[in-house]
Length: 495
Image 1 (cartoon, rainbow, N blue to C red):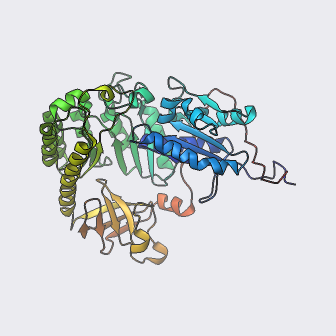
Image 2 (image 1 turned 90 degrees about the vertical axis):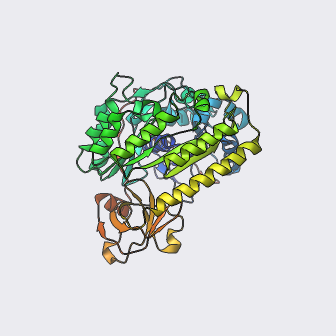
Image 3 (image 1 turned 180 degrees about the horizontal axis):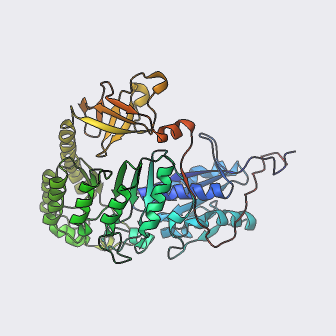
């Protein structure tokens, strides 16, 4: 017989869908579970607790969730004591509907009460019934919660949550709430904690990241934060996502250009090139303002790589409107673009607008847009051939790396580069190291560097990756009692 004290701790796995905010929230969920006594399930093994961190923005998000829950049902039936939890934006939206449609789910929690997960799991075990808890407002800023980081070399740092905009196609403000900003000192302390553990790169996160400071009425707060983070010794790269053109100001451009650690990479969502469509989207800017921002960015940083988001087929979009989008894309010369076919999102104003377009019209325009952007991306990447690039080596970025003998890394402007690491024996290149190499080939979505390395710098992040360790950031007390270490599962047929 095996006692509870001798049995292994309960294991967990977090599955993430959607945006960078969700990826970072999943790091928090992992940190919370480990602080409560769970351990990460080994790769390929079933977990005692499976957490689905959902997205409500992507098309068919509902179908994907319930499909995944359907696949988990027989796993749970064969594994007594297993628990399934659903969180994130779709949980915030659907609430008790999830348990009604999938009664084998144990816990449903929303975007505002991530920190409640361990207590809800314990309560569901104790009460032997599903627990649904959806807070209407943020209970505690997510970054005050413990986190188990996924990367040894790069870290997400949330500077705000929520959004004050009213874009007619977007459901995020309804699910994430009004914007809440962290104080600069708290953000910088988290960045410093990551750098102290070897992290070389941070990405500052916000639903509307450059509106940072609105809560404490400091319009220059975001530019100031970039400059202050740039003064942290050992921090080599700073990125941020996603800004909004309406609030994008020249002081941010000056901070980017004048702070060596800030990467010359900018993701600037366009959504449409038509002024009329932008007005109906309630985006708060027009074509001229958008293109003016890009001109000023490139004047200050000629090497800047700019990417974007575009929605095709918004209600009422005419062929003339779409032609304007194509023209703006031609002028903007984006390094890359995330292109989407508009689809209705219940609860958004656009879902009830007149002029919903037939699927075949939207599909045909989408194909024209992606063909144009593919041509531009390839041309912009061909211009990189022959250039020396500094790469922060990543893990798992290149799906074909094992077959081709290459590794992958990101250049300072965010481009993905697959490169030959060479044969340095004990000095082998590791994820987290920094290399310099020369671009030899270009494709629309990546670059290739097949020549010898110009330089290779081993880093503390590379040491950590090699040792299998990852940064952790501790949280603060939530003002609630701890739930203790969860009891282990009783093996089937055991006692």
